[in-house]
Amino acid sequence: METKSALKALSALAQGSRLTIFRHLVEIGPDGAFAGRIAEALGISPAVLSFHLKELSHAGLVESEPDGRFVRYAASFATMNALIAYLTENCCGGQPQLCAEPCAPAKKSRPRVRKATR
Image (cartoon, rainbow, N blue to C red; front, side):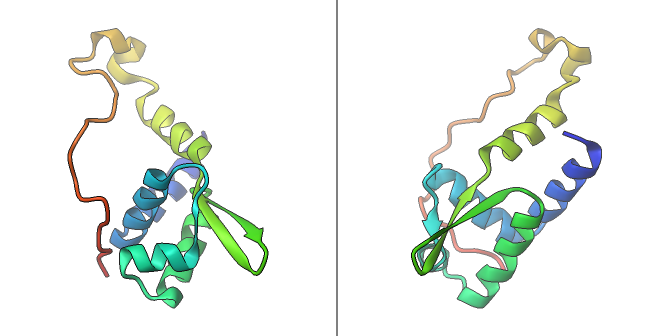
């Protein structure tokens, strides 16, 4: 991933509602969800959700696919993984075995549905 793409992705995620939406889509998995389901799950109005999905899409973090009259949205795991790789590629001088803790997501118990911040 290039620095410009990383900055675009990080900028998109640096807003509370977009971060909540993206994390929700990551939690759902590769099948994604329709906008109405996302809005309902997160308590976000459809117009506001549409704005944030557009910003996430422009950053390459969300993919959309028409499905009949509706559009299904899913997290772009390829972009997410590229961003993580970009952020950690030189971890401990390029020797990740020297890092105090491995670069792996922590297991936390958290509520399944989070309300978006506005």
